[in-house]
Image (cartoon, rainbow, N blue to C red; front, side, top):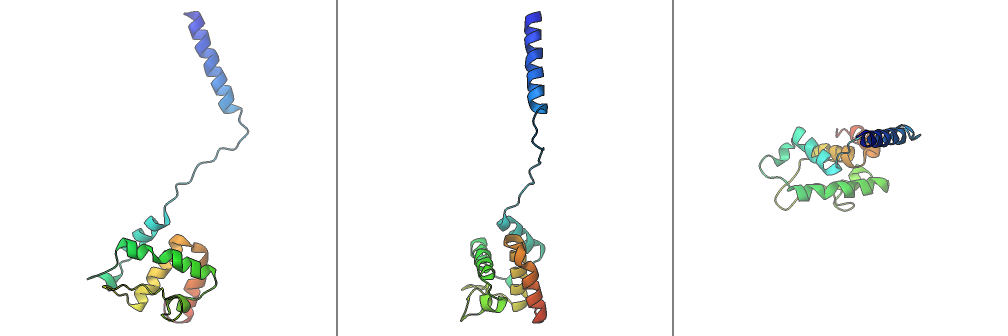
Length: 132
């Protein structure tokens, strides 16, 4: 019995030394939230009244943010992104539409979730044009 107790004690001490002997700083993993979940949650929290009677499916809506972020990364303006003759990324579907003020709100919510480094630029542009 003493041999078993001693072996368990030695094993516990070895595990304790291994755990305490690490020079690596302890880091806590921050929970990450998927951008699509963050974006869809923001849409729920800030309803788009243009879509009260008929709006996009989640699939249709989620197709826009990566394209908007890519356009912003390339240096394009909101006017360019939403322009029919340019970016052609105004949030509208065959069976649903979006008022301009709502489209700007959706864009900002998407940028906050998917590419927040462009948020300040987008908001500044929308405010300077009187659209936000």
